[in-house]
Image (cartoon, rainbow, N blue to C red):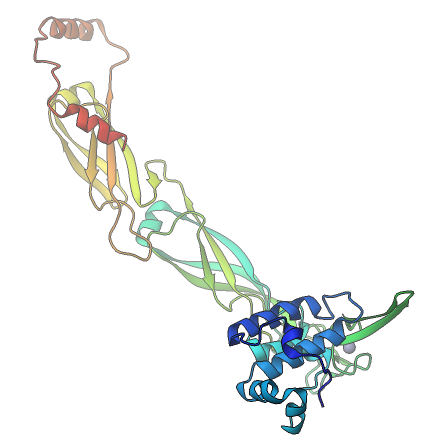
Length: 372
Ligand SMILES: [Zn+2]
Ligand SMILES: [Zn+2]
């Protein structure tokens, strides 16, 4: 027997030509605002039932067709009866309709998902370049083995809560000058689980959960950036009786390496050449994230020159290839000279010719590349 004679399209606020998605959308929106747990409207529950009924009819082609042709009478003779439900099981109803929990975590403590765990580890830049496996310890709430999470001493069972009759929720009616207000509240007798433990489990003091130090091996992928998180699905705190466990989020801090500056997947570093090494040319070893490499610097190497080591930067996270490593040349000018050194340099200066400091063609281009 239908509980309303109002027009179902009107109740949902949709056109008669509305498609499946629009109907679903309208229903969701209304259900969210009218749910008696959310709404303070005195007639919220009544309207909510209407909305559910309208959705039930219009979301199924058979019943919708009957209703379109013959209205409420058609449904009645077609044997349609709206699903009866109690408000305590509404979240289940939504899960059945939409495959998710309309009201989010906490609306139904009985199945509440466990909380997430956040933890942090620090790795070196060179480890980030290669990828590394780390043991990550963290405290986590687990389901008690002795009572299998029920909280009841093994051999006993939790019993149905007498305050709410197992619904986990109680309706509170308050009378005011404006009328009766009905609100469903989480039952204080059982905390919403619908069941109470008469003989608490000794291992977990009746909570059904224990705190345990857990260590997981976490594979940190090559190319990870500072601050990125790795999610370990289902490794977090245990859910309340039957609820699924939360996740673990491992935040990875990449310790800055004093030798390098990382920018995206590129790595920058500097190399110091003495004035004479730069002028005469020299071979020097330079640190890269792969280790030392020998670099040849030709005679006349200038401060600000950049050597690009293609593909020697950081690997692209979950991708292919690597960034570049750019080595910036710094030329050291002597700060303190002995009399003899001074004399030698003065001697050199006297012999400087027109070509001595003449820039190569393309010097300006090279300089520009330093700033790109
Ligand atoms: Zn236990
Ligand atoms: Zn209860």
